[in-house]
Length: 311
Image (tube, rainbow, N blue to C red; front, side):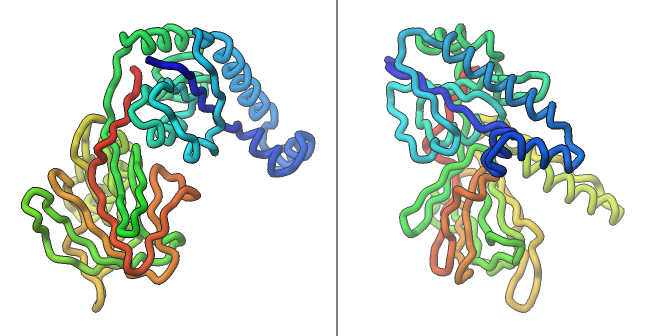
């Protein structure tokens, strides 16, 4: 059933600094000059490297092995015979899950003292047993609902936690929005809006960016004498999505009638009115984006593809 093990890794903070400053010594000088503890960066880097080295040996179970750095994941072609292991943090699992298709994904926590690991159920010493159970078809798997944005120009982007549609910088995003009912093939009227962008959250992402928006809204409501806003709660498997318009601005040319709601049997449609600088990105990865400029329509809803996390 499986022929290859793909181990997905990430660069540590120290590796990133060495790339930036060319040498380890220059990276150390920069950190210490800024009053930071270089030893902490070294410890994190050493722990992570030892974890990856150990896993390469422990996970030798007769499969071909491919070690893949995080930056290469979007362009790597995962096969139906691959089993995938992502070696922490949570964000690495979330971003890998969008690209592996239906392949099982194991999240391994390389440093439990440093990472909480909501998406990292296995420690380094548990990874071999988890992999063997997965290969044998005995592992417990949770199917996580992903969000999908399809653009009228044919581009497509998936999200594990949330999609963001808006402007690339902090200027206001200009667009038209409506919620279209898929079964009835009808929807509400188009509304022209000006805002800081639109977030569409999955169940897995409901404790992240969406939770922060709820906290902000709740604080404003309390300050004005109203009741606190309850956070949106969804399971990872929830087929619904929830959208929020960030900081909608009402003017002669923009309104704020549709600013939040469930997408259940419905799709969110946005037509860009921005001549340039419009973007769609997912899970906070701003570098991996789709252009969302004038004339492009984005249709957002639950994806047919599921992320399959081994738990």
